[in-house]
Image (tube, rainbow, N blue to C red; front, side, top):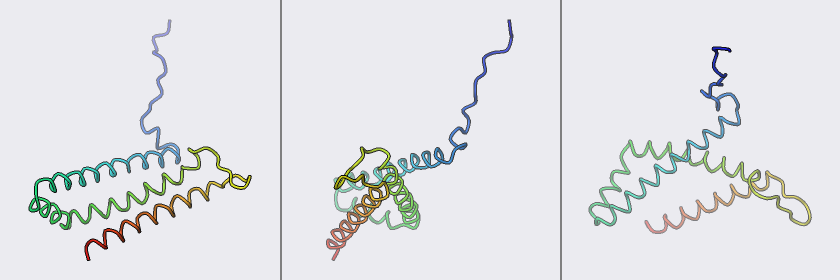
Length: 132
């Protein structure tokens, strides 16, 4: 009988060994930032429910340098999050055919990104119109 136990391969840093897994883990971490911003918005809704003074205080807090830096980090994170999800979209959806030809993955990704930019621009126009 051998006194040596069974071989157990270490899982430490498994995701660092392959560039695909690194990108996957970074994409998953960006979801934490999305959730953090959802909490920021939820606090705004709660403050709105507490009255005008509470809501204005929340808006004032969003204008602090720390909050602005946080929002710049969030913007970069959200851009990467959006790009990465539209980039994997062709891999996760059924094949699409237009005119009997398969739609290329780059076309699917590009169309999704253009749609996201148009949606963001529409939100900016709508929100910008309410502050006039």
